[in-house]
Image (cartoon, rainbow over all chains, first blue to last red; front, side, top):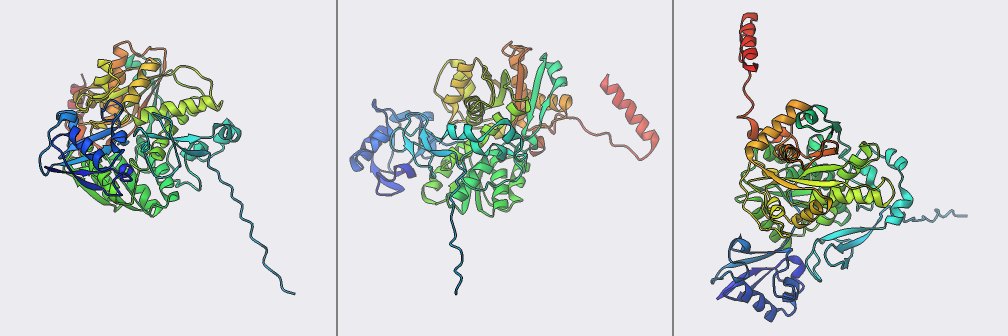
Amino acid sequence: MAVQVLIPTPLQKYTNDEASVAIEADSVDALIDGLDNQFPGIKGRLCDDTGRLRRFLNVYVNSEDIRFLDNQATALADGDEVSIVPAVAGG
Amino acid sequence: MQFEPATPVTVTLSRSTFTGLRCKECGHDYPASARHVCEDVCFGPLEVVYDYDLIRSRVSRATIEAGPVSIWRYRDFLPVEGDPIDVGTGFTPLLRADRLARRLGLKHLYIKNDGVNMPTLSFKDRVVSVALTRARELGFTTVSCASTGNLANSTAAIAAHAGLECCVFIPSDLELGKVLGTLIYNPTLMAVKGNYDQVNRLCSEVANTYGWGFVNINLRPYYSEGSKTLGYEVIEQLGWQLPDHIVAPLASGSLFTKIRKGFDEFIKVGLVDEKPVRFSGAQAEGCSPIAQAFAAGRDFITPVKPNTIAKSIAIGNPADGPYAIDIANTTGGSIAAVSDAEIIEGIKLLAETEGVFTETAGGTTIAVLRKLVEQGRINSEETTVAYITGNGLKTTEAVSASIGEPYLIEAQLDSFNAAWQRAQAQQV
């Protein structure tokens, strides 16, 4: 079950400069672990010591913020697109 | 005998007072390049680091007063190295608002009117002037942004002035004035089918692969510093004094935090005497994630999907929300939300009492100001400054159904007399 993950520029040093990678995962939590298996160390950037996504990171599944879904337990299906986006200023 | 040309002497006379970037959360240091998050540790936002001893040695009230009548009179507090892009941004009027004050029951009320900021009539000209100056220094030839409207206007205009390529992104449902006020500068304008938070996400994805300077993304640390000048100017215009209380609109929360930083920096370098200033923030009920978190005593933001006429502040996922809550709490201020109807009343109240036509964000600020006075959260004796950040002519749709109509008359005295009597009768 492959999911496409969009990697923000600051994390691309972990992904050999790839802006998009494919990961097998059935939930956001599984995706984070899958990313770390493929790109060791990336989970430590994405999550704090308790495994929670850092508060300045936003994660979207098919353009929907996972905080409107089921947070890190949000289920993923084949072909889903997951985007990791650091917080930005606005207006 | 042959004369050699004099050997050119290159003098590096850097005027910059900043030394790099630092994570606001964990303190990790980074060079002053195009980056905005703490990528090595915690993904917290990066802030510009200054040498305040150097600033203190360079500036005084007199040097600032002798500077240009723009934000660049404070250039020693801004993260630029060379000649700035000076389009006359800043030093907007601070109006003593006695008629509005009396209406609300306040004694010392001021309006900081950035609705007449240059060149595009909103406070965004401050942040964009700084961001594009820095973008040019960092070698960018194309600049971009995600915008609720005002930022798009400003980025397109100042990019045109500076000769930079420009591609900006907005939600597709923005007010006509904001769309037109961007297109006239001939950027590439992307109207995205979605709300601002979706536009922002898309822009972050574009930024991953396009080597552009996004003012609110990879240039964010520099961009946001421009808002500090709204703090400096109020101090200077109050006769080098701090106010007691400020009220400002909250969208991402960045402006709020930077007004505070501006006040703190002037205290730090000895330009103004320290005293407590209370910070209160204004949101629209239809997009009030910060006000909701404040009311619930939370220090984290639960995002919302915006549904309000106050489109310029309709950010459902505000990046600096937690910092805004912290400032309101630690200064004894408040954060409140008002309905769209109250926002329209706020726009009309400011116009009718002070002759200032603001957009929906300003209406939100005035409506929240009124609410906080009614709730006793602003003391009538406090010197209070309300920040008006945008111009009403950009959002005429918001008020067009609420302001009456002209009397259509013939070019004859009888026709005028009859209409005048009708007008007098309506006023009773």
